[in-house]
Structure formats: structure tokens, C-alpha cells
Image (cartoon, rainbow, N blue to C red; front, side, top):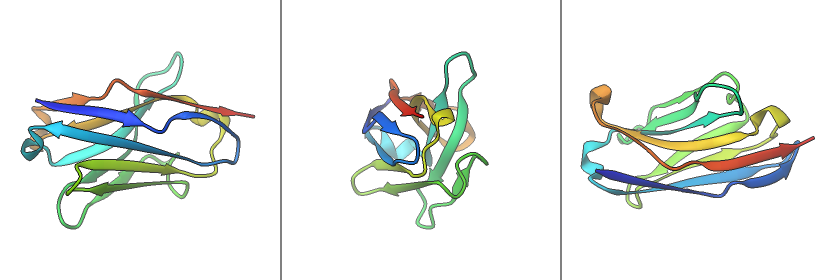
Length: 119
């Protein structure tokens, strides 16, 4: 089992920045990819960004995140962060940390953290 705890959410004005952090514990050895997803009211959960735990740290971003958000990880601390800049009201959502094993047969979620961007 892997436990994920998110922190750093809150209320910010449009154009502002927030940094989300996710701390993982438990059977981290089983995980090769961590990332962030979000779910806005009335919408499905969607990808924001992912990063592999490999030395290179391959990243993948949703089009909506490219150029504004940056995902990073610290394997020694078992954390993954999401730096969000130039926030827009449409970024308002509950953000979830995710960790999964190769092939996705083990898939873990944090409880989520609310990000609200006011116009």
C-alpha cells in the first residue's frame, strides 16, 4: 500500500501562483509514476501532469498545464510537487495526487486538496 498526502492548496487570485506538494509513504518501491489530476465541479477527473521516478524523470502535461505548471519530484523525500503559475479561474478544482505502478495494476490516490482561483 501507498499513502499520499497533499498540501498547499487554497484561494488565490487569477494570475497568481500556488505550489502543491504530495508526500508518499508505504510501498514506494512499487511505484514508477507520480502525478497530479484534478476534478472541477460537474466534470470528470482529468490529468494535469505526471512524472516518472526514473533518473531522467519523464514528464507529461495536459495541454491546459503546459507553459504554466511545472511538476517535479524528490525521490529521496518521496515527494512530488506541482508549481502552478498564471492561474486562471478555470483551474479551480480539487487536485489529487496519484501514484501508480508499471502497467497501472496498482493505482493510489490522495484525498484531494481544493484550489480556488478567483477572478
